[in-house]
Amino acid sequence: MFQFIKNLFEKPTQEVKSVKTVGEMQNKPLQEWEFGDSEVFDGMQFIVTLQLRTPLNILIHHNEIYRGENAPPQYAKELWHGLWLPYIKPKYSLGLDGQHSSDIGYVDDKEYIKFLIAFRKIVEQSIDTVQKISLLKKVVKEDELFVKYWRKHKSIDANFPDSFFYKQLTKLEGIGIKTAKNLYENGFKSIKEVQNASDEELLKIQGVGKNTVEKIRKSFQFLEMTDDEIKIEDGVS
Image (tube, rainbow, N blue to C red):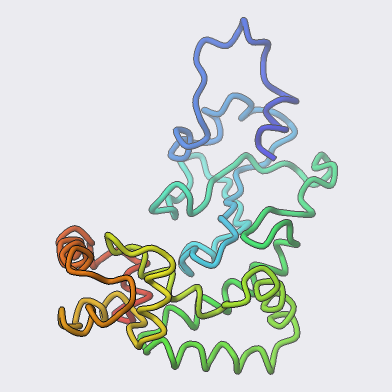
């Protein structure tokens, strides 16, 4: 959507001395954007990445409007988490805010964000994976909106929600999706559980050899256990 806006209002190429990317402008006030003074815009709007992996503390700021004179709050710890964009006044929006891209295709963001928040509230709890899945399935029985998007995820990935959890294991060096699934199905459902396993236990898993074990052990030296996503999936937040 940003590129569409930019195409509408940007100056002719020959008049542009330098071009800043959206990422470079995240810590800049609206006045420093190319069209900050336009009558079309009214502050800045935070648009999150609508994906299962997006942390809860980012999701809760989706569609937040900032009209201050200084740079907007820097919610995103990683650029992929979300972006501040100039907020188009409703009368100029041309209906462009109806559908947003997500990890299941185009969705109504006002609906899907509720699903994502509910999902993240559970997976970010300091409980084991089995308990998290149990809570997720409980919500499926109680919330029609949750059911709608749960089914969409299942239609794309039959292994959902287990796949969400075993994919976290691919953060370990030498572990691909297939091996991650094997580990998960054999009781190693988090990075922490793999870390605590003995070499003998890991070598019993199909796809895990001595070289893989060495890579796994080495990767723990580089994984920052303070990283939000790792903490979340290991239940140590």
